[in-house]
Length: 435
Image (cartoon, rainbow, N blue to C red):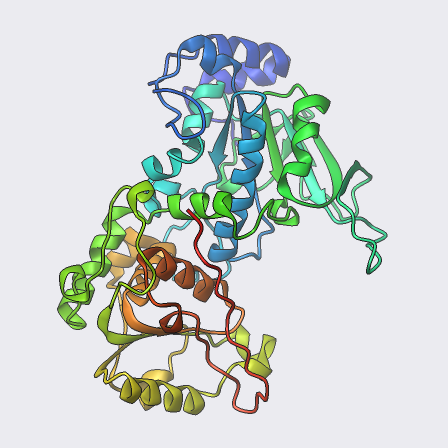
């Protein structure tokens, strides 16, 4: 594999010299950054000494996991970072996006995508200190992660009724997805950054909430940069509580994607914030809308998942004919003439010709990527007069949360399609926002 070609000779020096010596020299060269550091403040503007003393938390998720599950894992890791910040100066390094299963558009480069393409970084930084991976490379002095912990379940599993939170360093259950090169560095996926190396890898069996790993990071390792791989194995500290919602509310979509969605609403769906009585504030901390006060656009919002859901959730996913019957019933019930559909089905349009979709040009797809198109779809669904989604879909869950933030009546939000033969069609749970 080719040598790193960044500020260039640094990596070659690292190959020739001991990693620790290289890292210490690189650290000494860090320039002062810009802003105050700590929860609720951006990571910029640090004095040089503070920049050298802070530690970096990185994480990754099982490759098959989708975009919206990964957003949920971010919330869990944010809770862990808040716990760490009570003791030491840490910053979360946002894992670049790319190579996800559902991102299948051909001829589009979709690796090493920064979070700023999808989310508003100043909004994230009001909740916890975050930086992009490229900034981590610049600050830490090179493409090295000192310690990698691979999180795994306990090999022996757990017995029902005996749940307890615990964490132990154990032999790796599965084959490592990292391999050592001739210089004894660990190589792996690392979000498409081939120049990145790990200096140490250990496996941790974990059963519990995200902050259970805090003592390991604070006491068991002095590594300045620590990565948690398979971070989806950590659970929420307090799902649905104030801390959860603060982090979720801070995950504001990038403005350029919201603008595209708003323009589409106005042009094709007769929907604007003024006409819809939708209150929106760019500062999420000031975005506190009473539930039921938002009316929404004069259209039905639909998320209908097909493809893998047809066999993975056969009993609670309707046939296309069943879905169309439900859609037209809701349109009649709420006196709506337009329906916007976010779907992975290519057949629905044939039997529901009145449906509207956001269909990007190739140029738009190249700019916004599959992840950006998904966000535009969610933003449009989030503004509908009434929304109906797909059972157990994280795509639909994220729309529920967005509508909760916007202040919609829960009765217009927490709805899902039922399977054609489903006898007990339980509707989604209302997780009330907590300020």
